[in-house]
Length: 331
Image (cartoon, rainbow, N blue to C red; front, side):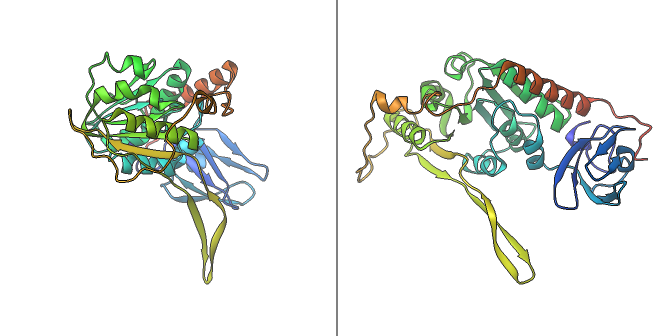
């Protein structure tokens, strides 16, 4: 079942998001005869199969659950993860700041767990092309399973290329409209990216720390091939609104990463120098050492954990791509 088929009553094999009495979310895959268990009661999947989207159903103890098909933002927050995902708040900014448009040719690296790939595939549409570079095969397997789990198929316009972008991109002859780099050292890929990115195209880098942000910004300036880089971060603070009780939420989604964008200049174009530069731009080998994987505390998941996540993602994809049982027919 493709994402376009996810309309009408709930059917076996679909993912459904349940909101409990205290707002707790659970996402389940509907299977005939299966039971959803909580510490307060049970809810049969058969009660949900055949119900329309947005239904409220009762568990065995009388608790009411709101049942909805998960939105893309809901899905990426609950899908199996091999690597940290790009949060919906940042994915939305990436799509906007990089001006991802229908029919665009987009290059991304690395693919991680496939969260950003899903947003990019939606933005470029069926006429676009997404090439995702990933060094680790286990991450590629997880991303492929997660994308198929949401879309119901592996899109024909999406390719996962195994290998280092800096080595693999130049031999592929791609002219990209947009390049998205989500990696520890994006400056290492600038020569390959600069050769592949079309004049006027957008380069966007997603980095976690200020030292990475400074290094990639200076590296982009040093090439002389781009406009002055712009950087930002996005923080979201929700509000409690109930009658006249209006106040900020006690929790907020704070820093997750920095977004840096720059546009590719035309061949031979020379950008006018800025009127004033007062910041320190030099850095030493000691500075570089500050954001090596060991220094920033990069957590490496064990092979056993990666195999488990890959199995979960493949199972999710298999259920989503399984043909629908005509006998369910919404009943």
